[in-house]
Every structure is written in C-alpha cells, then in structure tokens.
Amino acid sequence: MKNLDILNQKKMEILQKINQAVKDGNEEAFALAFNEFSELLQEAVLAEAKGLVHAADSHVLAGRGVRALTSTETEYYQKLIEAMKSSNPKQALTEIDVVLPETVIETVFEDIAEAHPLLDAITFQPTGILTEILVSALDGRQMGTWGKLTDEIIKELSAGFISIPLDKKKLSAFLPIAKAMLDLGPVWIDRYVRAHLSEAIFNGLEYGIIDGPGIDSPVGMRRNPNSALDPTDGYGLQPLVVINEITPESYGELIADLTVAPTGLQRIVREVLLIVSPSDYFSKIFPATTFRQTNGSYSNDIFPFPTRLIQSAYVPQGEAVIGLGNRYFMGLGTGKGGKVEYSDEYRFLEDERMYLTKLYGEGRPLDNTSFKRLDISNLKPTPWKVQVANLESAPIPIYQVSDARLASLAIGSLTLSPAFNKSVFVYTAATTNATNTITALAKDGEATVEILNGETPVANGAAATWATGENTLTINVTSGEETETYTVIVTKS
Image 1 (cartoon, rainbow, N blue to C red):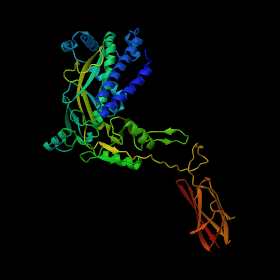
Image 2: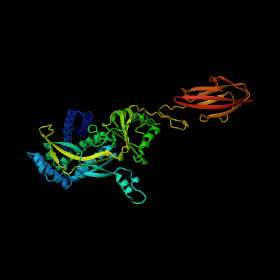
Image 3: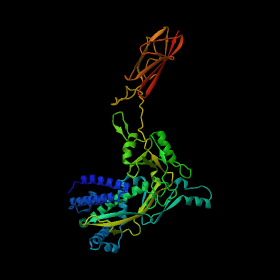
C-alpha cells in the first residue's frame, strides 16, 4: 500500500495534466489523465478503507474524517451497490426508485468550497431540483424607493431581478468504479463518490466561471454578459485594461471603476478578487507584491487594497481578472432525475464500470461592470523607497538602506546656527573672512557631494570666496535614488 502523502502528491500532478489537457483541448491527453486520476483516487480510498477496517464504530470513523451517513443516504448507496453488482447494471440502475440524496450533493459542494477558494469567493448556491431562480442584479440599497407606489416604481423594482434558468446547461461527471470497491460498503462508496465529484465538478466549474462562453456553459468573468451571444464564440470578451504597476494610484483607479454600477450609482467595495495563471503569479504578481522587511524577512501578496488572490490555469498567460466576487452568481443542482446512470461511453479497464451523474445549473456575472480583464504582460516589480528619519535609533538592518544625509559639515571655524544635525537642512553663519574651507562628509561612503556657492562650484575641502552681504551655500548629497539638500546662508560683514 502506498503512503497516503505520496498518493496526494501524485494526485496534484495528475490534476495539473487534466487542467492542461482541458486548456489545450487535447481529448486524448484528457482521457489518459482522467484514467490515471480515477485509478489513483480508487487506490487512495481503498488504502484508507483497509487502514480503518477494524474501526467499525461511527464515532471512531468520524474522528478520522469519515463522514457518517444519514439513513436515506445509506439506503441509497445499498441499492446503488446492489445495482452495480448486477449482471445488467444499466437496467438495474433504471429500476432504482431512489435518487441521489440532496445531502450528498450539498456535502460535495461544501467540500469544494472549502478546498477551492474560487467558489468561496463568489455567490455559489446549491439549487437542488429548482429549474429557475430569481437573483437581484442591483445593489441592495437601490431596491427601496421613497414616494407613492406607482406602476413606474413596480417596473423599476422588477427590473432589479434577473431570471436565471437552471435546467438548460448540464455538467456531466463520470464515475469509474472498480468492482473491488463495491465490497467496501456504503460509507466508502460515499467517500469515493464525493471525492470524485468534488474534483470533476470543480474543474468544470472553474473553467465555466472564468472563461465560459455561455453557449453550453456558464458565462465567464472574462465575458461581457450584456454583449450579443454569438452562436459559435458565445458572449464577447471584456476589453483589456493595461496595468503596468501595482501602486495605490494605478490599483485605486481600477477599483474606482468597479464601484460604478451599470445604473450609474456607486456601490461600496471592501474587497476585490484577482485571478491569475500560476505562471503569471510567480513571474508577474509575486515580484510586484513582495517586499523585504527591515529584519530581512519577506512579505508577499501585499496589495494597496484588500485583495483575494487566486491562481487558476484557466486564465490565459499575460492576463488577469479583477472584480467583485459576490457579483458572480453560480447555481448548481441535481435536476429532477438526480440519478446515477450506467455509461457505455468510456471503458478504461476490464474490472471497472463507468457511471455518469448529471448536474444542472448556470453561472454569470450579474452585470457588465463588476469584472475587468487585465493585460499584465508588462507588469513590473514595484520599487519601494525607504526614508530614514533617525538611523541611530532604528534597528540595524541587514541590507543596505539609502541615506543621503551628511555626517558632518564644517565651514572653517564658523559657528553654524543651529548646531549641525544631519536631519536639519537649513543653517546660517556669520564671518568677516574673505574665504573659508568647506568640508562636507556624507554618512554613506558611496554618496556623492556637490557644493555650490551661489552658482559657483566649490570642491569638497576647498575654500569658498564670500561677497559682502548674504552668500547662499548649497550642499547636495546623493545616495542611490535619494537626494538631500543642505542650505547655509553665510553673511560677510
């Protein structure tokens, strides 16, 4: 029996193959990866079942992560196992008078939302056997209107809802079940069915939610739900918005556009959703949102505004999607039948039988201004500047900090007023001398020091010549990108 950690690692590798096959539209690669995934998943469940074969008590099983079944679920799985063991499973499944309990699907949805942050970020609703649902398309504050109850107000309120049919689009999930698994009993069949459905459903949903064209799939966030529906390509893509840096100004400008609803009224935004491909996350987003602290450690995913960041293989490279997660609705249910069916469409192994379950639903952005498609192909790391107010009292950093201040400043033996302080930049001095030697020592040994007497350059360590009256002495100190300027007004009498 393989170590479960090894099985989990292998599972992630296979899921990446499945995602890539879907993304590439490679049916052969998908079939091979799906077969590999099914075998691995069954192996994992069998391994877990063998490990707990002596733990028959439901409390013990629950403590080890095995879900206790309801009486309805137990009855369903018992009949399902009997039908699957028959010589004619297709006929036997047709004669079963019970359907897949809604509690199983609800648990699957809970598993998905917990394991996949995308579904937790949107408005994801199990719909049972509903065929249609009304969803508010406007912000809540716009639904109440002061004044007389008139036909116009009724029309306005009615227009605030959209009717979403749930029985027009189908999400099919195949369940390859080895004959050996049928002897494990209802609890373990449930474990396998939920695990397989969770992965199959999520991969289908993730594609639909992000890039679904809206023909036989949901309308993705990258699409404009108000555009014309092309019979081949589906709804049109949202226009690309170029973003080259993540700064409060550039990021705030993007979010400001999201605050304006299609009605022209503004809505409060407290968090945004940002979805990028895994490769773009590490090559674009990660360098632009990772900063080094004064103690040498790094902090990553630092945005100017609260942002829920999600990686998805269904976002094209060079792009990202930003928007309001709660403004995307996804409803999914079992449909009226809700049955598991025998399928002859695929057969990978002799000791396996293929079953099929169908879910019905729909997903779409609730308006055409809640999501934006971003061009991040030229996104650059954001440079951060460090201003040092008092380096002596600050912790000693383990990396170099630019400091364009002077360590000392002397004008011959003249007295500066106030006394020199590296953080004070304007001084006065009085003299009767014709000249005095200027000595300016920078704190940063690699900094450059420029001295001007009026507009006349003076070499550091050389003498400046004074005219009668006020003379303006300017000392410019440059360290890296930082420049500080000291000014001394020297009055010769």
